[in-house]
Structures are given as structure tokens and as C-alpha cells.
Length: 88
Image (cartoon, rainbow, N blue to C red):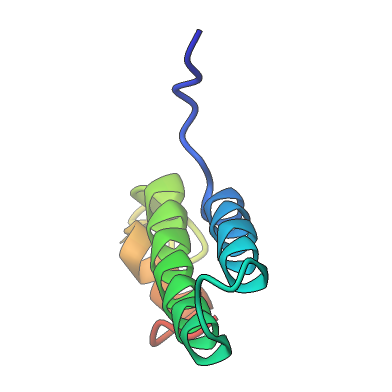
């Protein structure tokens, strides 16, 4: 039986780091290559996490502005307000 569960960014990163460390300790890659790949994995995991946040938020209404005319907040707007400029 196959598991079609989609991995979260954290689960994906943990799996990739485990493989990367195995490759390093088995001497398949150098320390410099390991560090370079680790940096790339972190960047990719951050991008994946950003997408998770945006999708989970979706489009919602913020009633703190007005009960009659609430402000529509997209997932992207929510992300920028809370995490801004792709920094986590």
C-alpha cells in the first residue's frame, strides 16, 4: 500500500537533511558541497512553507476595520503582513 500523504515543508526538510548527512558521512560529498546543499534546502523549504501559509490562509475578511465593509485579506497579504519580504 502506498502512502499518498503530502509532506509538510518541515517533514520534507527533515528527510532531505537526513539523506544529505548520510551522503556526507558516507563520504559521497565534501563538507563544502554539504554546506552548499544545506543552504539550498533551507531556501527551498522556506519557499514551500510560505506557500503552505498562503494556501492555509486563503481569502478571508478582516472585520477589525468595519463590520459593514470588512477588508478582504489574501493569503499573500497575510504572509507579507506577518512575515514580510520573504524573511522568516
